[in-house]
Length: 288
Image (cartoon, rainbow, N blue to C red; front, side):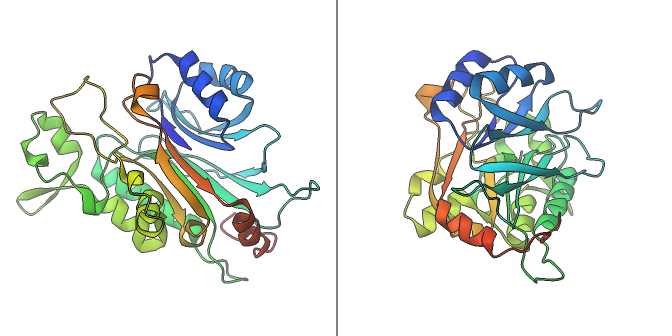
């Protein structure tokens, strides 16, 4: 799952929700470092936060369920980020007898830059390196990256964005070209052009799970002057991993809508399909 938990929200309620759900992976955005130990103890997870910088007091973090099927292997040292550094790790899949997969699964939690379309585009370009083909095997990397993108799917840019009352917000969600500004869908175009798949769109098109395209952001009345709910929080997967998707959805607004203006995004993968994909990767395969 991926969830941007905005700060100053009732954390104990959020942790109760996560404990009941017991996901194998949580791609968390908005982590306050002081809460890391509490989250680990309450939800029975192990956290791997992004580097802390002066410009990013709230961190992205990848949490793995303790004693779950995925086992931490390594961290990626991300180059200097334009705003929020992503949290990025490699994990191996634990088999029934405790053996670990040869191939690695890359897990990334990203909190896109809220004020700059150019920064968001740079982050998307960095993400493409994670699914580059291995020089030996020729196979692309297997990666799941989730987060609040602060931008739109290219096919879902709000048609009335220019009418937004908050002009600063409008500027931040658009990019200039000539004398006009356009809704920022370039991150989505870059990710899909490189070989990533939007999990929600894949589930809608291939599994008839149309509810997967439900908006993920903008459900609180805090900022009615900005925009209608939209799908700015998204999970992307390598094209091969998309074939393992069994369901995509969001948390229910009546259950978690008061905890954050962003709904948790929930993706379920077939364990046998994931095992097969990782078994095809030799040790050392991929960008890691």
